Length: 118
Image 1: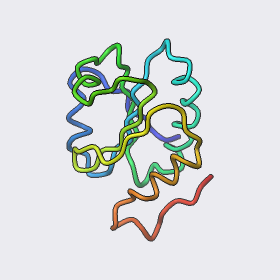
Image 2: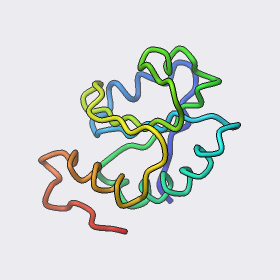
Image 3: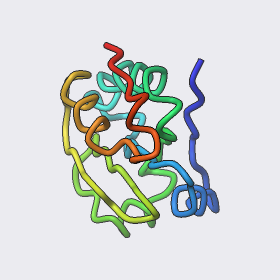
Image 4: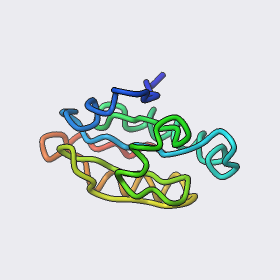
């Protein structure tokens, strides 16, 4: 099973220094759409675990991180490359839409092995 990092206070450096791009799910326990997105996020993590790191940030536990990246609505997914935001998706999206976004950001060195998993 793919590992999804559940970031806590002080863990953000892992996102900024990751060798692989990182897809971060900004969510909250009380958010219905966030709960609906969770199985899709887990499926993406299984399908793309070799190319990306997957992490979740509970906005109630880390409001300063959500504020730093102007997260105003959840769920919000942000893809970080080299510590910088490369793409943002706000709200629910299908597995296929998110998988296509990830495929566009697979590092060049890994492109020949791009996952076509569904």
